[in-house]
Image (cartoon, rainbow, N blue to C red; front, side):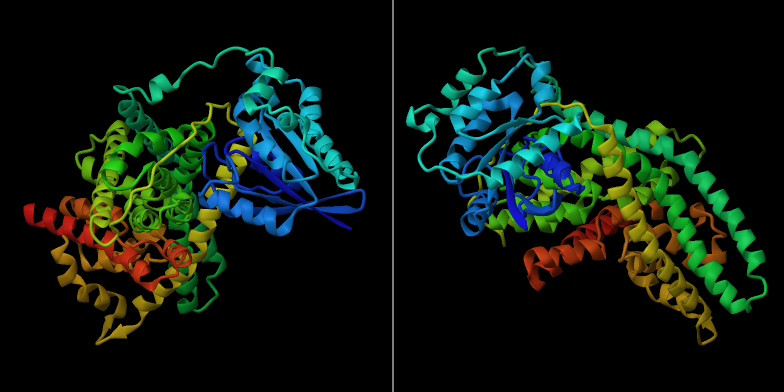
Length: 581
């Protein structure tokens, strides 16, 4: 036997958290509005019955025109789930009750999940669950993240509701003509304690941008400061392990031993030692900002400059998501209802560096600023913050260019509900940042690094007119690379790192081989390091992002445009710097 269940509610009421608790899935939850448009599906079993649940996109009503509202309305009309769970925010009950009243009139079997009751208690709010249940003619189950038994009670309430006979007719709240506000006053007589308005700091007219840039600076400072020693230790450990493997494989033919050790192992070890420490620090910190509710405030702060460019703050939110992964940022563009604005956001998302480019930028910042041994972590963090500011400025400029030319059209309005600042759930934060982000991205890079290292080794062994084919390819690219202030070796490394940006430095060092002796300072003189940093910021998206763009647009034209736009920016900037210097 199977029972169909749907979860509905306003954005940012903890609906995905409730869904995860019921089904045991780890759907990504974020403390911002409009996280996803596509519904998620999960199931659980209770006393021999299977319950299949759908987490519908967060909406404010069924009558609006946003993609989320269209998806939810279409699903409820087409599938008519046996039980509809309406998730309400106990800390903002007056606002979330409106949707509950609308859904009660449409669905005979409702279960009200009164979520975030722990936060409501801290504010002195004590909703009368019995009065709410009587008014909506539906059971009310209080839930809170720190009490798993509350979700077990919700499961059993859903099971009971699925077997109950329903009666027709309007609910008492509608018969009496009560509004959401009137019903709220009936069930929550006490107003509780007011929240401390931290938004006077984060969104204040004079302090918002300094705070925003200051948070970016702290994020990069902690990443750079914490990553140096672990990277050195990992590199030394992999080096010693390589010596052990060399002794173990000494009986193998020299060619096969070189293929395994100098090709596959050396590249993979370099990628892990370069990538893992920065990601292991950056992702938890970035997830912390998500859980605190900082990203929607960043989007609101970015709304004014994006509006001046013909877009809105939703693109700013997608840009912030792209800092973690450009492919995720591209998928996040689904929250933009205006088609031309969505295309502009997709085409410009790769102008913001993702996590895979940070290790390269950290190394290049050190080479540019630390030639005399006087580099400080503060200077490197400042340089990375400057890279983000430059990327944001170029994103705004390209968005304005697109919206005034090939993507000219009507500008959409932007309405964003700011979630309250919340205490992060450290357990979920660590799981999401370590398992769902750090290890997943590292695993993707390793699976690409191993065959890439093998390919580089084979190209180095193959000869063309007595010269290694790898060197021939690099020298063939020298004239083109020279126009950009780069070397053929670096440009070839950029091409070969198309599957994953994380591979750039390891591949460049492998291609250069004995010419640089593994010393990045030889491979990157000051002038070349500066141009390489610019081209790292602005060049074609990685293969995963490009595939995501194809899936989101279903257009070869826009997919090619997503390659050409950031590459053209990088070429122009590198050529300009090369000519000036």
